[in-house]
Amino acid sequence: MRILLINPNISDSVSDLIRAEAKRSASPGTEIEVLTAPFGVAYIETRFEALVGAYATAQLAAEHGPKYDAVVVAAFGDPGLQGLRELLPVPVTGMTEAALASAHLLGHRISIIAISQRIQAWYRETVESYGFGSRLASIRALNRPLSSIGGVQEEHAQALKELAERAVDEDGAEVIILAGAPLAGLARSLHGQLPVPVVDGVSSAVRHCETLAALKPCRAVRGSFALPPVKPNKGLPAGIAALLAAGQH
Image (cartoon, rainbow, N blue to C red; front, side, top):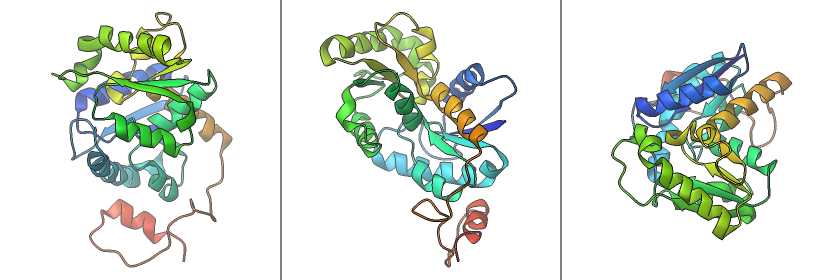
């Protein structure tokens, strides 16, 4: 089994964190590949940055995705996920969707721990779009400068743990999601140190992809996730154009 994880941000240091946690989480024999966005921002905090990240992800997914058994949008917020699910011939999931699916099985009230205040609105909208808004106990986030996006875990580990403890004590969280690719692997480090289960988006996405690929679902040929209709287009990357050319007539 081969799983492709696409980092919609340009930070190679974050891709390294994604790769390490994905390989630790994968079953024996599962091959992991991580690609980094060729353009965009260091990390996504806003809706517009997510729009840019979604397009960068679409380019890589269209070019490389069909060669894999499943694809992961490896940024919390899942930029472009629903569109990729229309286009690609293999299962696609994202860190938010997969983390929520895991958390759903572990408790009812879910809190998200994030790395910046600005990111909260986009995260909340994403959670609500998946139908989990009523189960979201809180989103708590760091409120301090980030000197290195790849070093957030080391620099702010204690503060992130304290935010999680407050989410449990003050917000009634029954499950904690550590949000964002820069926190990939932190749930593993905090195992047993918090009073409720802690979920990681990368490990959840890899495991859910393994399940989906093993189930070998057919792709949709009708409904909203069928291939887009064929129509004139211009200036698209070759991979995207090729997949669109195979669309519905």
